[in-house]
Length: 278
Image 1 (cartoon, one colour):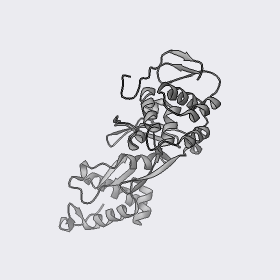
Image 2: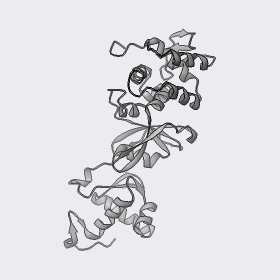
Image 3: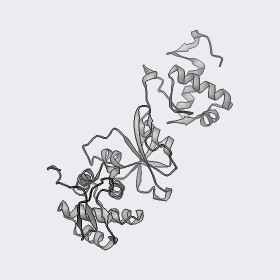
């Protein structure tokens, strides 16, 4: 690709390419592919592909994965070391999706535990469920699009990203405790939710009903009574909705454990009390 003479460079990038980058920044926040860039810049696809590859080699674009880029801020001192916000990247790659599980627990302040891996719930088929993108590990779980409810938008580097709201987060980690870091951690999160500002008993039951997995009510009821939380209405709702049969308290753990017939739970992990021994 032809480029202007070095004298035309401004802050490490020539004026023509700087203008193109500014256009990408204005019109394509977050990650974009060649087709989106071509339409935005008014260039043919082949020329756009070469331009993006050139800018990526120079460090002014960051390649998220093959054929997908993000524009590096023009005021970046070391463009080759810049990486896009992990949530914004997830939104572009896995959309329709939302940030959920342990990542949402961190976002809403329902845990002090730090998880480096970003948990994404996606409504599209994803082959690699544990990709590493720009050095950030992701864990992707797939649901049908009609199950992508109970989310709220947050802004990340000018990109609008969906994250599960606190109540949907609780339902998700009770549905699949592995998404919350395991049932021992999930019990702690449930305690934080029910003793904190986010508590909404009616919404919790409504979301669990809508998700359609009655094991959520079994695990919730068991945790409520185990932690001796004051929630008679919730306990009654859980008892009314519990299914027949037996489910593991934590399906990700290969252990037998005692059977709690009241809840149809096999207690295959030992729960403690928040702030105590686990």
